[in-house]
Length: 124
Image (cartoon, rainbow, N blue to C red; front, side, top):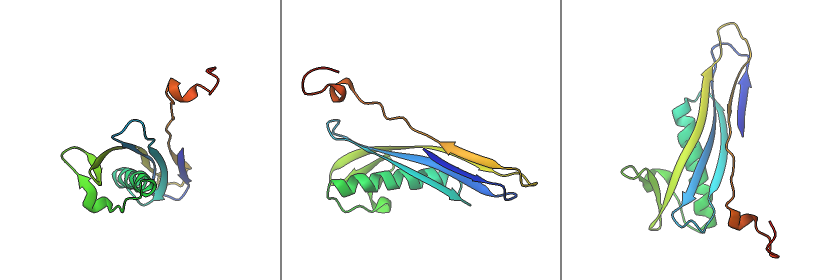
């Protein structure tokens, strides 16, 4: 969950969750959390996506530059010949002019497949 709040008048705020999934469904992906002031929802979402993809690349031992790896035709990151699907969940807001509290929250839920939930003894 990403959350951010302010009571500063007219302040832009954003909260984002980034998701990076490898093409091989047997490998796990990554979730990232990012929150910022003065950043649009679009920029915060892109940053969170890049962060999740960078974390995945790190675990795979791949050097990663989000600007060079972006493949806009497929909306995917290219990591050493492997395509990683990415996405983001973002919420942004601008606080009101009178300084009332304003918040932005973005959340994601990880749902595990049944195969992960089964213990060694076969019981769920």
